Image (cartoon, rainbow, N blue to C red):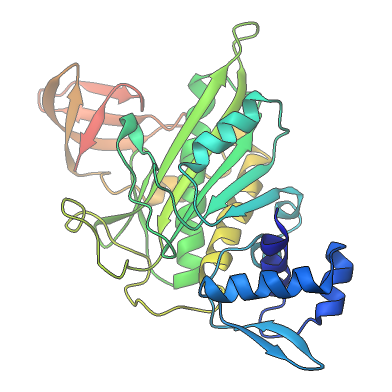
Length: 325
């Protein structure tokens, strides 16, 4: 991280409190002049930082910024093992982590960004990632899973996001099979898992778990085409103390607890009970054909069991179909 980013992390982890320029310089092994220049640059960027003689610098507690330090203070013991890196802007957190993975980066690296300029969703669709209102993060994992078992990463992440949102907001969530998290009938989170398969043993070499959450409404609202299908966790546009950092940490906490025992499916009950379509009519789109059906159940492999109008039943895997509800 740059000196500027390190200072922001320090101030973010002690939001509302004062840290002297001398202490910052000592911790980062830089000059007081370098600290002063970085503070001025952060203020120019819009961060509310007070400078008081004989006290030091303080980041306003009402500032809602993503910082590694502010997220880390909300992480549990398992979450503390993760290595967080936060960017102001980035083309895609998934792409950044994939590059690290290909170069041998160890499991547990997490990249977050205030904004994505080329965020992607399923099938290469763009993922709207405006600055300052969402959480866009990707986690590098190296699980001993087959390609078929990789759905456990995606579905456990959906359950983790749902529980985290409910914990922070007090509101109910739902999950659209396979991995979209909904609130009040609209999408609030998308999850994209990308992986590299080892031909030698048939197991994943690595997986990149990308999570994008709409936390607050963008100032200009959602663009055309999204307004009727997307929503945010909070409708208010004002900032909350550590809101996104607390939510990001809760997601990581829940997910890492699941990940530690993933093949035991510890998340399955929470996942099942939030599925939007169970017991309801759905449209199954498979092989360029549409068929009416009723969603019946989620099995232990997170496949969706459906009953077609002619009475036939089928278990659907995530890569084979799309579901309209």
